[in-house]
Structure formats: C-alpha cells, structure tokens
Length: 260
Image (tube, rainbow, N blue to C red; front, side, top):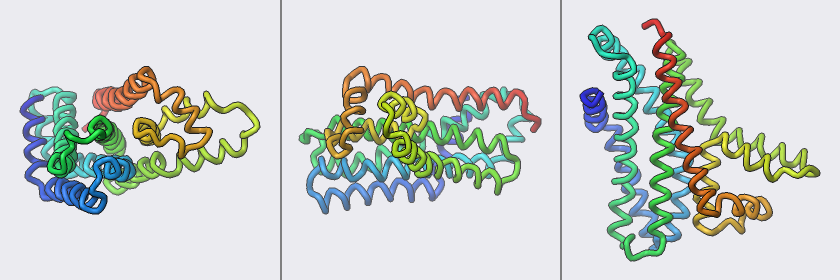
C-alpha cells in the first residue's frame, strides 16, 4: 500500500493542478494578510473560503483521479495485489497531497507575518485541522460516488450535486425547518442535525472557537453551550473522524462486490 500511496502522491504532486492549488492558497494568504495586516482577522476571513472551497476541490480531485487513472488501476488489479490495498493507497495519496498544498500554501504566509507571536495560533491550527479532515472526508465521498457510477459524466454530476447539497441546500432546508417549527423546542434537534453535515459542523466549530458566536444570536448560545466546551470540541472532532471512517469502510465494502 505504501508504494501505491507514494506513486499516487508523487503523481499528483507533479500535476500542474496541485501547483495551481498550492499557489492559490499562497497568494490568498499573502493578499489577506497584506490587506488586513492582522492575523486574527485574516483567520476569520479564511474560514468561509476553506469550508466551502476545500470540500469542492477534494470532491473534484477525487472523482477526476479515479476516472483518469482507471486503466492503470485495472492493470494493477490484474496483479496479485488486494483491491483494498490499491484503492486505500490511492485515496491516501490524493488526500495527503491536497492537505500538503493547503498547509504549505497557508502556512508560509502566516509564518512570514508572525503567526507564532499572534494569539490566533490555536484558531489557525484548528482551521488547518478542519481543512485536513474535510479533504479526507470529501475525497472518500468522491471515491464512493465514482465506484458506484461507471459513467464519467454521471459520476461528476452526482459528486457536484453532493457537494452542492452539503454546502448550500442542507442549510436552506435546515433554516426552513427551524422557521416552520419555531414553536417547538428545537435545540437538541438543531444540534443533532448539524452532525449530519461535516461542512456545517466545521463552520460552527470554528465560529465558536473564534469567539464570535454572539453573531449567531440565540442559536449561537445553544451551540456555544455544547461546542464551546472541551467535551464539545472532542465530540465534534470525533464525529468528523467518523465522517472519514464511514466512507472509507464503504469503499472497502463496495470493492468486495464490484465487478471490474
């Protein structure tokens, strides 16, 4: 598996899209810090960009890599190598290369502007951790979709629809439900339903750690009571780990039944 992981990692690191992705975060970090000249404000601005963009890039790269390397993967499958070893190696190679671009792309400008002297170092670390988990989650989801659809166009379509649902539509349904049933106590329901969307979970986690939950009003107070504690932080990160593990488990289960 390590050899396949290394091959996928170096293959992607040689790709121009990896350089474009790295350069985007590098330029974005320098521009934000140049305009704000304040690490704390730059971290808040980065939050929305990472939470929306990282899942989208992870989804697109995951689906694109699966379909583009399909012939090579079929060649590997003809060798005495376990299916789970091949796909787990590819999955880890993509996720690690995307994470490296994210961490280096944002880390270099923030270190240059004195991150270690800032009080926002914990929030910045949390932001990178959440971005890393989102990379692993959405690459795994993209692999699930690609494995279930032989047709490349359908695979891309379903993958983008999945991202759109979790990034935009889920919030709309959530808010409409809160408005319709506002006469009922929905505190626990709101907390419970948030856990079914890794993007919402990440957003709330970072908002609360940035101590700007007052902007969320009454809802923010409810979330602050749970996510604002150390137990809430550990539980929410644990749920995001489950979001990584479940799609990976499903990939392995799908591989056992799939006829290549």
